[in-house]
Length: 575
Image (cartoon, rainbow, N blue to C red; front, side, top):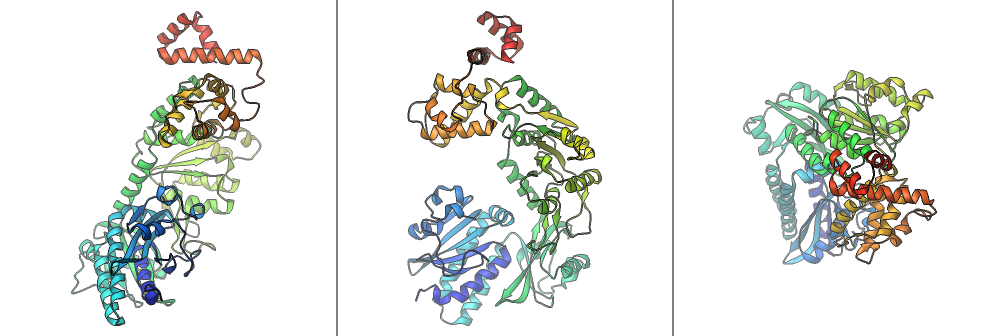
């Protein structure tokens, strides 16, 4: 019998207790990758095997521990047979060693954004936490007497709990405090020799809020001892029976700072990242920079793939709200019956399938930041009414809730549709349209940006050279002519994908037209009339000269002189 299988029940109890404390799922597999114990509810039945060449498998082979911030994109998991179906957002794997031999792996996995943030923000603590848990498992295997094993595990558990950078309060089913950790004692000034009643410690208001929730779910932020905390209640379940509750107190200020900092670093986009020198793009860039530092609503108009979200992020990062949360939501990608809960959140038990703790919405999460409403034209009329009211009153109600929550995000919206035409056809509310369309910014399609096609192509070529470790020197003349002649219905997004494809499959020193033609429409760059080809070539020559001399007026005059044309002709041929 497998040595880990012999203590299967004890392992399950231990990781369930860990899960109640950390809210992070834990799985234990043996050296044959068979799952021995797990807190994952669905899709990972006990007895089933973990995937071959997964992080679990590599951990057993090498004996090393791994912390993967994005398993689906991590090279370690590139050969995993289940990579296409992988649902893990963050993964921590540590080998279990016993008597000098690797007998299995314990893994902590995040399957939702909240657990992901918890793992990322407490990386070192969890690595130490899991290493000590491996030690506990080895100890369990060494001990033959169950009582001694449980006593030792309990002692180790409290050591681990005391090492956490969050407050832990454990209560029984009578709501009496059984234990607290060092963090809670320090932050709330708890005297361990005279522990107060839970309603006195948390205040009667907070206590009643948890009673209403049956001590399950989240309350907060609440102020305790002049500090703000978010408190999560997690039931301790033993054989499907509740045996108490773990209250986890998280410092709200640190949570907010960590989320903002992570979001800011991950999504940092500035106007320097917006590549192109066409007059239409430069005009859009100037307008966006002028309004960035005010809270005026902005409506970004443009075809799909023109970079509307990039502009929205650049506006946010140049604004006074740059240190707050930026959040994007695609109004056309969410089922109509879920849009309200996505935007405004919901309370516990609001609908079938809802999170048992309730969930904040996008408005609540970025209440002081910037909310980007992409494809606003796809928002149903019923939600347009509610959105307009929220923007006017600056407060929301969660679905199933009755307590107003104050919010004040800056709104940047975007659409590829004509909202004005939709208003005329009664498909979009005029009051919401006028509220959103204070400053419209038009992003031109790529086909109207002339030589920007080549500038962007070279930009993407440099990027993918670095990513794929290639050393392409540029494009052939035929390839550039093909790029200039193509209409790019998918705009910048299509161009980026096209250059990436060419970088992967090109075998020469320059990107040629042959590989490009495999991805673009068969007629692209062909069957153009002589006048069209001449116009494109002249525009390319003029744009190259401007690139060489500069884009200011004097430089353009010099470019016209060198080309033997007037400045008026230069501008006409660039249009």
